[in-house]
Image (cartoon, rainbow, N blue to C red; front, top):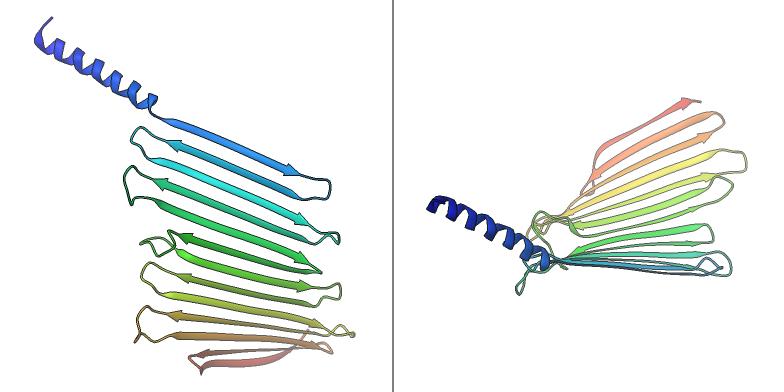
Amino acid sequence: MTMKSILLASTAVFALSAAAFAADNESYESNTKIEKDSAGNYSEKDTVTKTDANGTTNSSKKTLKIAVDAKGNTDKIRITETVIDPKGLGNKHVVATKDTEKTKYGMVDTTHTKTVNGKNVEGTKDNYKSTSKIQKDSEGNYAERDITTNTDANGTTTSFEKDANVAVDPNGDVNKSTTTEKVTNPKGLFNKNTTVKTSNTEQTKDGMVKTSQDVTVDGKTVASKSETTQQ
């Protein structure tokens, strides 16, 4: 056997040994725990942990809880957390989300939050939170409020608020209104906030429909229109 062949054979053996060594140093663990009862209460917890040959640990944890009271009202909470922890100090990356849903007397409240290492991370939409409240009845009356806030990697905070209402009177006439407000707040003491507010209304009465829209920017009206049409 030539020296070149010996070197190639030695390299191949070393590569196979390294692959086997890498596989021997990987670990994987998964656990699931579920609890529930006849009343509808439910609890589930799932955890997965994996460590690769380089010492990087990836883990995920998911928790779901549902609580039901005697009147059938429900509280739901879902929490997820993913962690990437490369070998070495100060390398851990944690993403956590939390979703809640509460139903009580026809009102549904939901929230959604997301954090990344508890602070802004470049290229990641973090510090995010949204809430939603909805109420409606059998007569067609309806109310909804949504609020969302987000801080991007540059430190700019954007908040968005929406209010929608529908009111129905005994004659079947309908009043609808929707108001949205968006506030942009750049990072820094001397950066000016920008507020854009849009209001829409629709009134239906005696076969006539009246609609209007107003748009303001930082309190100044930039657009306004209204019209009346027949159904």
